Length: 80
Image 1 (tube, rainbow, N blue to C red):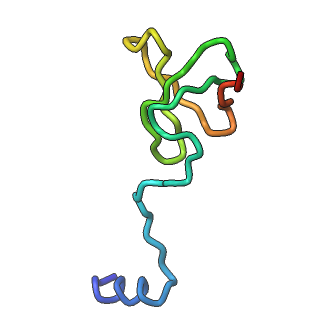
Image 2 (cartoon, one colour):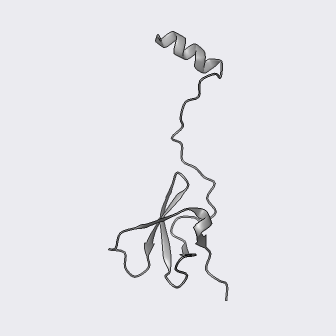
Image 3 (cartoon, rainbow, N blue to C red):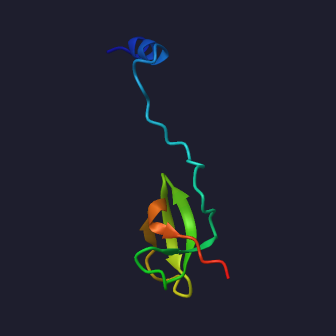
């Protein structure tokens, strides 16, 4: 397939190109504090959000490996 044919397919919406745009549909912003459903007693800080995955650091132990979670696995801290 030649490049002009490929461009024609893209323009006809018959060929989809993968997008690497940043998702902005997260409900927890970076640098916020949350907990995980699996260990609610361990406080976490959201370090990054990429491709619908939250990268979290354990509060007080930032040298440890980061933990990764989907949004459904996180719980906001309880309001007191």
